[in-house]
Length: 270
Image (tube, rainbow, N blue to C red):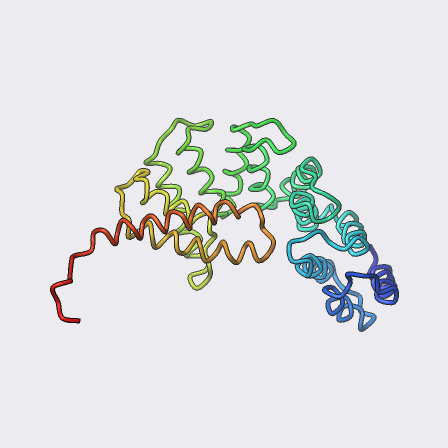
């Protein structure tokens, strides 16, 4: 979509001021305040900001129409195709549609998007609009891992853990989890590591998957996961709600087990 056309549509939307526009108003007003010739990245940033305004809920219909048109027109660019696929996957554009998500993920992955490759891995692993295919899932996760995606590497660990396409091997599963965590930590030492990666490390130490049971290590990794899951859910990722509940339950159990191991200091003067 041409910048001039986009600006015209957004300004028209502001004039119409339909019910429910308030969360988007400041973003649209700021973008349309000047007649600038925005580049593709700036327009994509606008789209992502409008999606964020919805707080994980479906976009307001007239906003969704503009977002959809912008992304469809730019779908030959991997970042645009990836974003469009993600919106269909989450169901915040005009309903959840895994088939369309896969379509745009494929376009983005073919153009080199490691995130799209990872997302296709999920689609094939869980059979979302495509037949469950562990071999294809593994291949896509491997593609994402080779391009530096820690979560893709962690998913390869899952496939070893559960014996999906590859032979069951807890030792290799733990090795993949540990590498994924180290990769994420080195990429952003001061950032928040993906909760799925942290949860898998917690699982390994909690259940003894490829390593010895260590409740202290498990608790530390689960607490990292808990914090990161809260952020993800606040950003609208409803897919991880069950994972957060599981992590909280395991933290509670670990605390009980560790508390039972504490020495009795009742004889001391407090």
